[in-house]
Amino acid sequence: MSKGYAHPEVLVSTEWVAEHLNDPNVRLIESNEDVLLYDTGHIPGAVNIDWHTDLNDPIIRDYVGPEQFAALMRRHGITPETTVVFYGDKNNWWATYSFWVFQLFGHTNAKVMDGGRQKWIDEGRELTREKPSYPPSDYPVPQRDDTVIRAFRDQVLQHQAARKPLVDVRSPGEYRGELLHMPDYPQEGALRGGHIPGAKNIPWARAANPDGTFKSADELRAIYEAEQGLKPDEEIITYCRIGERSSHTWFVLKYLLGYEKVRNYDGSWTEWGNAVQMPIEK
Image (tube, rainbow, N blue to C red):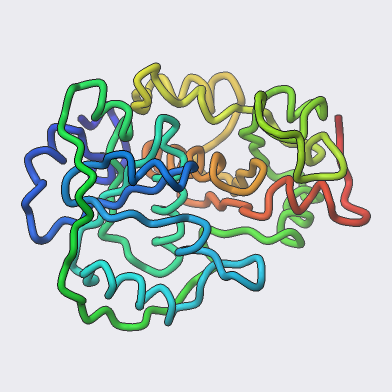
C-alpha cells in the first residue's frame, strides 16, 4: 500500500476497512459533496459528517469552534484515541477536506480510505441504510490551530508578493478565467475569473488514478517536481474555489510526498475573486 509514500500510514485500503468494520477503536466517517448521498447507502458502521452544517460555523465563514467540535465528536462516540477513517464520494475531496479540518483541531489519529466510496461500491462491498448509534464519548475541548496548515487571504497576498509557490488545483478553464466553477456546475461564486498571479495550475485530479486511488510517489513527483518544479523544502499554498479540492493536493504534498510546509487557502477563489483590489491574472 505504501507506493513509496512519505507517510503511508495515513492511507488505508478498502480491504483494511472491511477488516475493521467491527473494530471499536475505529470510526468510519463519510463526508460527501452531495449531503443526501449517505442516506442512500453507506459503509456499515459509518457516521455522516456534513461538511457544511457540522464543520462550518452557521454565522461567519469559518469553521466551528473547539466546543462545537468536541460536541460533534462526543455525539459520534469518538475519543482522541479513536482512529477516524474518512471516505467520500467518487472524487474523495471531502474525505481529505474533513481530514484537513480534523488536523486543525489536533485529531492526528486520522486516515483516508484510498479510492473512496465508489471504489468500495465497484468492488461489490456491502452498503447499508442503517444509521449506527454509538454511546456518547468524553471528548475534551481541543485547541484549534490555524497557523500551520491554513492560510488566510493576507498571508496569501504576502506569499504571492514574495513569489513563493502557489498551486491552483482547479480545472484549466477556471484557471484561465473562462469558468467561475467546475465544468457542468452553475457558474457562480465569484465576480471575476482568473487565478492568483504567479500560481501554477496543477489540477487536483492529476494525482488520482481512474479508480480514485492516489498515484504512486514516483508518479506524483514526476508531476509536481519534474514537470512543475516544486521542491519539498519550499513553502507552498494550495487553493481552489472553496478549499475542498485544494485539500486533496495539500494531502498529496504533505503526507504522500512529505512536504513539510504546505498550507491550504480555504478562502480560495470564492474569496479572492470577490475581494476588492486583489490582483488576478487570466
